[in-house]
Image (cartoon, helix red, strand yellow):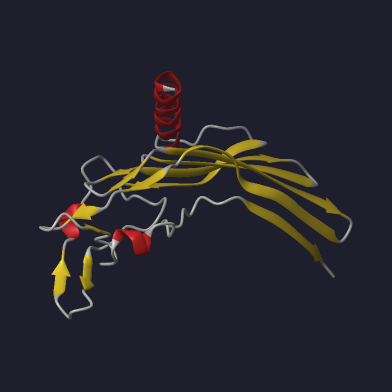
Length: 182
């Protein structure tokens, strides 16, 4: 698993170096398009750690959710164009997130979207995030001074929070669109 993780990081760094070079590599048929990246975690939401307890006391515990690792995400589309069809392969990478109470493993995602023009009709069909590797979200409770477990993102007791995991934005998405041009 570690070898795959290292190989995927090398692939992502290679793609990044190709994308930030002076020219975007590709022929008139195959190109990288809509390439973007940032040093911001993008896989799910992150709790602020600020909440009001049932007794009215305000807590500001954001340090428990502060990142302890490099945040990085990259997205690009590998596009193949011909006269009447288009093949798009969305490629996404997020380096994950590591803090005291929230750990998310890096995720690698690849989709497949096809578009075909037949006379006045244009058909678009595909799946975003067709193949996903990683992206496991793991939260830990925080123990108060009485050794009670709490979720410091919401202020709820851990037993009340259980099963309400953070939503991962890298969900499988089926795409279908048909348009008619007059």
